[in-house]
Image (cartoon, rainbow, N blue to C red; front, side, top):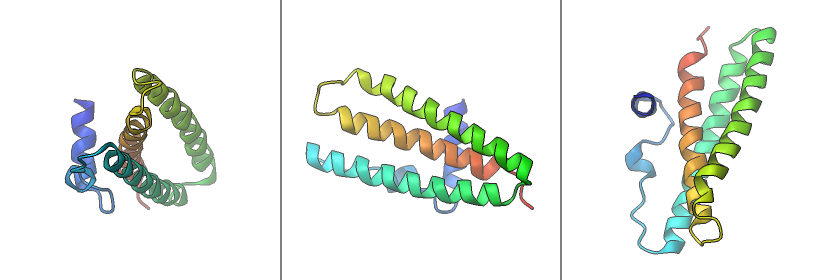
Length: 120
C-alpha cells in the first residue's frame, strides 16, 4: 500500500522520473550497470533539489528538524540497501542491486519531501 502511494506520488511530481523513464532495456550486465548508475544519479539530483526547496519553505526551527530527519533517513537508506544487496554480496550484480535500492528509496524520499513540506 505504501509503495503504491509513493508510486502514484512519483508519477505526479514534475522532474521526478517516471517508471517508464527510469526503466532500462539493458541486455548486458554493463548496460544494466550504466542504467542503475544513471537512475541513481537522477534520483540524487531530484532529491537534492526537493530537499533544498523544502528547507527553503520552513522556519529555522523546522528546518533544523528536517535536517535531522534527513540525516536519519540517509542512515536508514544506507543500512536498508546494505541489507537488500547483501544477498548478492561477492557477485558482480551487487553494485546494480545496491544502486537500484538507493534510487528507489531516494525517489520515495523525494516524493515525501515534495508532498509533505507545506507550501508558503
